[in-house]
Amino acid sequence: MDSSGILERPAASAGNAVLVALDLGGEGYAESLQELELLAASAGLKVRGVVRGKRVRPDPALFAGKGKVEELRLALVESGAGLAVFNHELSPAQERNLERTLNARVIDRTALILDIFAQRAKSHEGKVQVELAQLEHLATRLVRGWTHLERQKGGIGLRGPGETQLETDRRLLGKRVKVLKEKLSKLQRQRDVQRRARVRGDVTSVSLVGYTNAGKSTLFNALTHARAYAADQLFATLDTTTRRLHLPEAGSITVSDTVGFIRELPHTLVEAFRATLEETVHADLLLHIVDASSSVRDQQVAEVNKVLEEIGADAIPQILVWNKIDLASLEPGIERDDCGNIFRVRLSAKTGAGLDDLRQAVIEAATSRARRAQSSPETTQGEPARKIYVT
Image 1 (cartoon, rainbow, N blue to C red):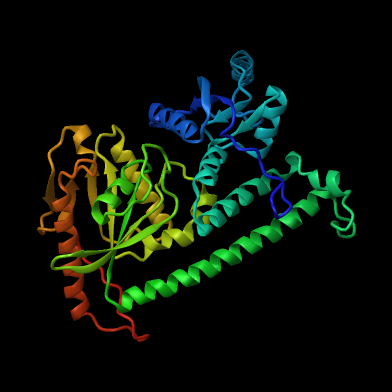
Image 2 (cartoon, rainbow, N blue to C red):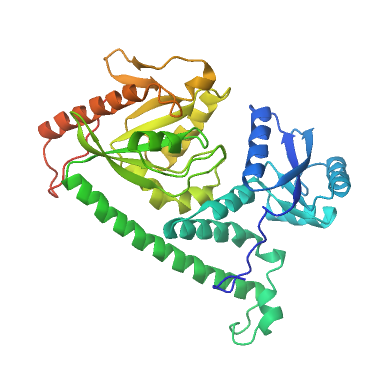
């Protein structure tokens, strides 16, 4: 139990697991399954088996059919695993029904990602955001056994007149969510002050965005000589890190490394991390990092752009950065559009090949912004109007 009096859900990182991935007729089934295996590994799970199958639509009660659930039950028994991980979003009722049938713990893709985020968050803001996302996800699953308060204290002094235990738990949960949102609001105001200071200083802000494990942190370190944590795993970076960088002809710029995106990113996470992602929303330029060696890079680019649209960052100029060209047998270089603007850079953050091309792309974007800033009128509030340039 944590300091808020709310029962903490056991971490999915401890134990063996059987993965469940059903083909519902959509695209990228094989890649989605591979991604689930990487998520499980990132959470510290030992995968003891994978149950596959095809369905036209999910079963309302169990998501999978009875025969497939029986197959899963046998796989759990034979492997000694106590956890089933579905590569889908389960309803609270489906989760409860599956746990009763399997006599094992069941989590869905959203809960797995939340668990990884809980393990990786390091900063105070990151931890607050993760806890908020977890509580909002768990709010729909209160009926699953939130009677710990009654067992511990008999409900005396906790319940209001006529309140059931479930209502008490919801009230306590609501209070904690309110406190966390107030904390995030305060942190966001602090971030706004810092951002306005950068605007007054006419500093170009650049944010690195991209699919998880595309190599953003490695590139961030290579550009800024920082020591941000970088690893070959999903969601290695959760907390936004910003460094100042001086480039010839462009002066000082700020470069921010942000959390990676993933397909079907839980909406609770997008909402909770909105304060951090505002570094992206208010950037002058986005460097969209792409794993050039991935067979599904086009789909990953589309997923990132979808989240950028959701947070209101889709209108910000961006340059595609094809990273890991050493694994894709590609040559470093730049590509320009019909107007002569750089729209794609090919490089390897690991070997350093093509980094000078990226610096040149950022210099061109920053000098273009500066020219537009000189010719654009001030807003009525006395701050520069937002500058949009074509890349």
